[in-house]
Amino acid sequence: MMRNNVFCCMHFILRLKLTTVILILLTRIRYFRDLGYPYESSFISSTNNIDLLMYSYTSDTKYSKTAGGLILLKPSTDAALLQYAATSSFLSKLYSDYLQLLRTPSRRCSDSDSVFSSESLKQFSLSQVNYILGDNPLKTSYVVGYGNTYHQAASIPWDGERRDCSEGSQWLNSRRENPNTIFGAMVAGPNKDDVFSDKRIKSWFTEPTIASNAGLVAALVALHDPPTASSLGNLGIDKHGMFENVKEVS
Image 1 (cartoon, helix red, strand yellow):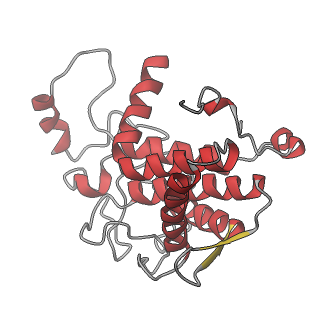
Image 2 (cartoon, helix red, strand yellow; image 1 turned 180 degrees about the horizontal axis):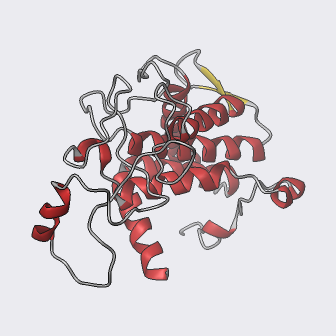
């Protein structure tokens, strides 16, 4: 189990833009472990960039959305759109939690009149997960086994035998039902027109990956606010522990 979790985290980080990860972490340090002068100016630039990214999630100024509401973070790509939406869902809810902990209901981007709120980030995050789970034009869940209507995934049997990739063709091209179904897996998802083709040979629609599912799991965890965390006022976030050893370098 630990090995699987490590691999999921590794793939998830690789899928995220490294710069975005760094900016989020630097912003967190600034908010909850401010090192003060002369480091403040360095952290401010990170916060400004993250603010612009968060605003772009909640407006149509940079990224457009499908008619059904799925954000298009890769306009040049017409496949596997859900992985990017899941990641943006996670990041937006995480930042929303940061603002709530700071008791800051909204923020204004540094170089414009663009304003976004912690609530708008939360609603955006929720909208992307809801789309994945069935609130979309096709009224279908893109997570295998969730909801009344969902898509299948996987065709090679799970029978304890070791198989190589070349052996998969006989099941890929078969018209029989899947001998193995990956319950809980999110498939690649629809295209820009909210159209989805549930056929094995069209992997750009139907293929689930560790990377994309790691993003969805992160978003679902972020959106789950346990009552105990709310009562404590920390939303389940340890403000200091993650960077407990970050200290000023003399």
